[in-house]
Length: 587
Image (cartoon, rainbow, N blue to C red):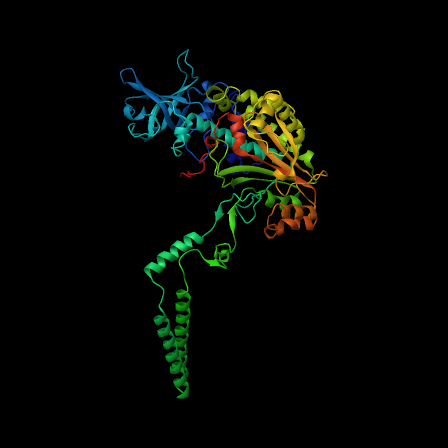
């Protein structure tokens, strides 16, 4: 089906199958889901309306539904009055697809002045009708009843009708999803996420949720956000000490004198052989007095500021009783499951406290990280290539309308790029071969901003030259110098390189980074020490090598970079719903 997304329609219908207790749809249900020849229209789950995509994304554009009465809801993209204000034409969009449904409202149904304002929310009942011949749309809605109106004051609406830049929209994160570009990016992002789970489940991987809070630095670079309650605790204590000053020495001495007096009372009662009830009551008062002294002494020791011990921050007083951070990767943790369940993957948010303002960096981003046991570097490359091809083909098959929008408005080459990657075998070269090719290019007159020599970490300009100019297709570079890679990557026999690989693609450069993991206990210990990392936080990780070690490999795909590659958008801040970067963490 050229215009209809079977994947979206299937998801729309999944809940109906679950509610009915069916594991597979009947042929009648399937016919209704695909909407191939059916003249009926599918209602949305959990909402008394019909999704606009269920109407206009049919192969016939919705014309086969003419004569049906439906309820729809959405937001006005554009509106105008016509025929001396007798009725209004509205372009309504509900986010289910890129297209709008034309809605016609007569003046006797509602105040047209409110309805034509861009951003107005509407819910209406009406009859689907065929438009006059020659019109672009295949069907339109003649409104019979206006159910709901969410009005807009056009003077205050934060999205003016002029052409809006993506940079302008970053200052209006809560509203930018109403624009055509961001809504299309969101649907593409959703499709890529769905495709990710589909690919790995198809190939027998188990989805494992790894922790966001961690005590391990996966990359060893130290650029991590710290998770602590020490600062808020110190602020709270400082406020408390101001409002309730700590006890003086005189207060403590008076409390101790009270303890002595209560002790004497108990002794006198016992000496006088008073009743057990009286003695017990006096003992209770004595205990209270002693507890009060302990509390006063403890409070007198309180000092404003972050607690310290031996001149260092005392993390034993922190929430987790040790230093903790937001994760930069779920890889180390998911490895523990690969070493028991063989093929696993994690897909979640990761964080990097890198003070970078480039168009390729975020402080919070999402990573897809599979891990495969009983596998080596070549297996890793095969999996990465198959996964990227699968994602590209998925968008071509299931997100055509949104991709055509991107090709029209953002990057004319985006669809061709997806098709090329989906069908073309990736070029594979060693890091040494890649550097030799770049040095040769420099000798022939090519100028790079970053110097090229063996041992450097390839810059984005180097990666894009390899993919866009030299090979004009994706390139997998493998066997990198150990000095520029993480401690967990397997040391090669040359003792200079590690079994690492990066998947480089046009437009973006590095899309995937992966490696065969170092499974040899003595080697990984040496690598940790060589890089100056503390061994203690990785003791649990070393247990995977001590007990039943296995060759295994994996990689990480930067999810936002995949969306960049697919859409052709230039700035990574525009392909994540709520971007976080230095100086900005809105909403």
